[in-house]
Image (cartoon, rainbow, N blue to C red; front, side, top):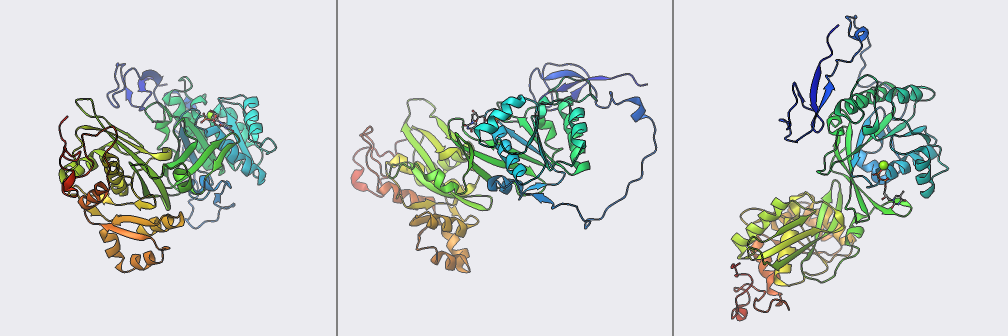
Length: 498
Ligand code: TYD
Ligand code: MG
């Protein structure tokens, strides 16, 4: 029999080394190597012995499956993200910060399924049965026929679930607490998490039950331990939200059976998570109408248009290197827009701190937000409120040109639906439309379309309406070229000194 070989496995990335070292050469983390039995070393010799392979039948793609391939949970926002329902035999990983609401979401989803008469099982490795019951009671779901257990042994779980009807959905909350006898490492280690997940995935594929594995996320936003599980599962969902905000966003990071650009929006209330089917209203609800520095961006989240408020604060700095703080957007994207404003539009920002925020805790990834961001920045700098009935979208190129973006008509329709009166959009969005966009737009409930070909003209438009700030009398808000009478004092737009 082979000698049990030991190796040192990084608990962050799963890389294995022959000897211990302080720093993982693979991911650069310190103190993450732990001695574990190498994969396969603990497989019983009886299994490793040379056995002849068993014959199995090969199936065709068009074969019949017993049940409907997808099982919708009945929570519209959850179903949209997973692509229309739980696929038979699929395994999902749900990651999120502690306390974000993963257990709440899954309690609600399982209860809905149980009420439809499906067998659903909730295995909690973290909370006692009484605690899960207490939560269900708070949510008013105590009457749902969810089967509950507080267990951590994968062998026991698989044995129990193999009895009786195959469950349609099994929740494992969480995968870090599970352990299996087949490996020797302590629960929570990479080897244990990987082996436990493998066993559960095997069970799902064999029986056709869908499984959701809950995974915790570490400080830097990676799913600890379960990171190594990501490639094994069919879909990775992440549940996000700012701690202080009520909104929670469910996002698919990977999905073998559906899109990855859809989001589900929820609101955490005293009675659990409430679905928000019209997120635009949510993100715009507490809007500061008419204050400088805010612009409404007509964005897309997957197939759904979402209007969201972008907020910028540009304030004189007291620091040698001005601050650039961004929440909800890419900071290098902000730097790019600031550089274009500075290089092509004569907007001097080097003497100003810039704070940028996306309202409601949403995270924007689209380049289409550039134009709205630039409008918000210039509006704050010039102390010029933007029209409250306008939406903005468009990508800014490094030359300062405003480039067209996809799905313009969906964005415009949403804006019209929510009562906006005008849209500021790239010039060519109209041109390419000649064919269909133009005609569609005409019917968009009379939105006034202001097309911009270049950022410079938008900046001049906004700055022309600027008022001097109370706190900043020395500087005037408008660029010299648009309002020459204000040039007697140094204009903010030209003041490059620190
Ligand atoms: P939970 O689902 O336990 O989070 P996770 O499983 O992701 O760690 O949610 C915990 C938080 O949600 C907790 O801070 C309380 C809050 N909460 C509500 O606000 N309302 C509710 O109805 C419930 C059940 C929880
Ligand atoms: Mg939990």
